Image (cartoon, rainbow, N blue to C red; front, side):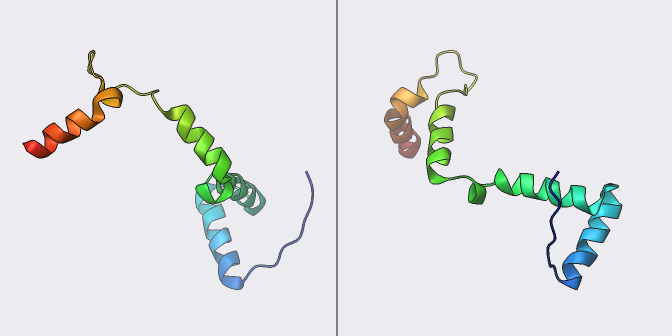
Length: 84
């Protein structure tokens, strides 16, 4: 572990103490988890990585219909939905 020092407001410290007590973990652990969480949010992920993840997810999910071809026939289904 690397030791570091930060400056925070009194209100932030009060919030950290409350969260720490509520979750039963140290303030240091709370901060480490917060950093990890921030790194996984869209703000912490580059545009290139977000695009890569989106492309990797495409086609990986099923609608549950055995003969569904929504990805191939989406325009047809959209037209039918609006015609109804």
